[in-house]
Length: 498
Image (cartoon, rainbow, N blue to C red; front, side):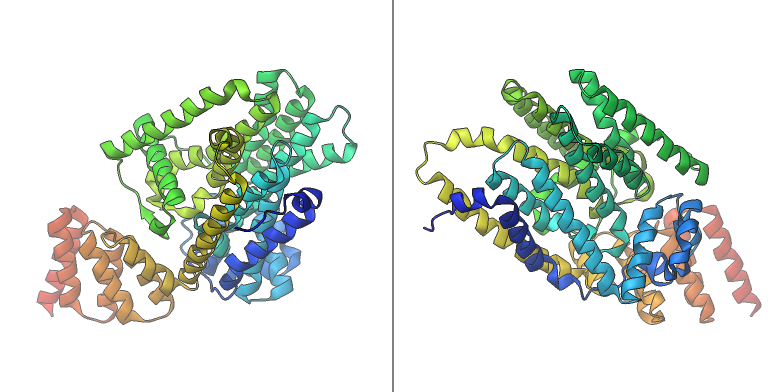
């Protein structure tokens, strides 16, 4: 068994960790640079006229750019100007080549992992901090966020959020911090809020800390003031109204989201580009409360062993999870799909929590001989397996055909992968395969109106009235929808006239 160079790592912790993370990052994500545009990338990036010039920067901050670039104009109000600023900068450097945009995503993810390492070093050893950062860097659960150019917003708030907490700990732990730390602290709040609206929970952390410990009053007041200003600018530009679902629906959404997150975290081979929304079963509810009970029991077990600053770190981990889980809990039933990019921030929070509890777990294994060598060996084996899985997932994200083929394989009973595959062939102008996947989507779910409508339109464009009537008649029989049945009757009358 090899000898762990603990003395060398401890002496040169920062450069060693940076190089180690860079090597692991290169091994895991070097094969996603040949990826193509996926789904929303086509209208947000590929055909977006605004990112083709740097003169559009004022437009990004004064308009809702995502809605104005949508193909059908039916997109929620998202005000994320810094996302499109980053796209414009990428286009100025790399032109229309997707590899440049993928490289930017990779770099954002790498620096988020590095800031995570710096954040954890306040309390933990180099080994635990580096191990946790490496797990976050290379776990397959982050592949969708990193390999999909359209997930740039998740990567940006991951970077701004991790940097925000790192700067906050500097300010919280020092009696007389220098002025540039305050400047960075208040700068990161608008950067995050202008990247994605989910960021708004993170700057509330100083307020919670002040409420609990009576420390950091000026930081709390300043962060809330800057947050209010940033959100005020957003609501001046975007006239968005939140629709709050019933409490039961919110609970169902939250349980489904949480359980799917833990499933992909511990069983990455079950990863799928999309996971259809469904109502939670009794087993889902049982697993959810079992996990909550285990986490709550563990926190009660270690609560007396935690220093005040460690409570701040646990609060940061919780905020990272809730920053995505709460908004998704409000909207998941309307979205209809659990995208794995939603797990990026919760995974960041889970890694922080795991790292902070690692020293307490290690107490149970102190009697084992060669403990450090065994842990290092198992860790390297785990990282090797995760690198392999991550590269496999990156291959699936090479283009839309490989992506939705994997989704069909992982979700054989769902109509959604066939719908997305049909939309891909629609862009490729391959009507035969487009119509075939519409038909398969309807066979999976007769109530899938969009697939049935598009299939009828294609049959009508081909002047194949009998097939169009057959599809409408089948939809009418299955759904008993008055509008569909009326359309079927009208088409039948039109066929009779001919």
